[in-house]
Length: 332
Image (cartoon, rainbow, N blue to C red; front, side, top):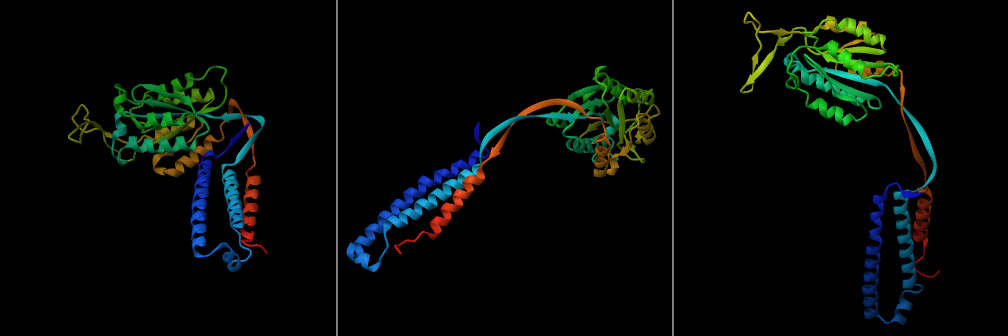
């Protein structure tokens, strides 16, 4: 099978007909001017050894050099043998908290946007693995099943908002459960779940569930989003300004990141806790840990190996260019 690796370079060959037309027009006018200036016999005496055929020969050599150079740029390739490759990957679920407390502005612009930013960086760093996205508040849902369609993950992540889940809370246990249920009993390979949350208003039994999913082969990593100082929880907005949530006593509800819980979850799930305040170093550290996960065979792909022959055409282009350069315009 034959192909050009870069076929768009072949459009440059359209320059050659244009060059030929320009050359012939200039040659025609040059010949007419010479005929008007002197007779042919006198021209031969004034320019001994010069002939128009030699000029034409140099032009042909230059044209051939350009043609072969264009072919070299396009890189002609012939197919060789078909080869197979096995693609392996790890399975990683990212569970993002979209509860109302994630709208607290102690981390500007707010916790949710900071969480999205670090999650986007994680998706980019984990390319080559299967990634799934879980969104949770009072309930948990798999928004994107395990996939290598990273664009779909990023698109869903971008639109994540507390309005998507009516029931408020932090359903960490449910996030573990639906991630665990997405694997069959035959799938015993090691995998991971990354919780991106402030850990506020969590449901019960989250730590015991973290131990269970680890026993089932899933490591638990946690990323804390929020500050120790915390901030008031907005429950609505009016004219662009937040209306803060109040408790039964009429006091504003203040939310702080629950680092103690998130550390305990990571310990129970044999993973590690990180703070979103660590920035890009968080992504590097976490991806280093995830690289240790057991890889599973995802698929086998067959492809055709092509051999390039641009070098042959490049040598021809150089040879014709050198011939044009050293070709004498008149007889020696």
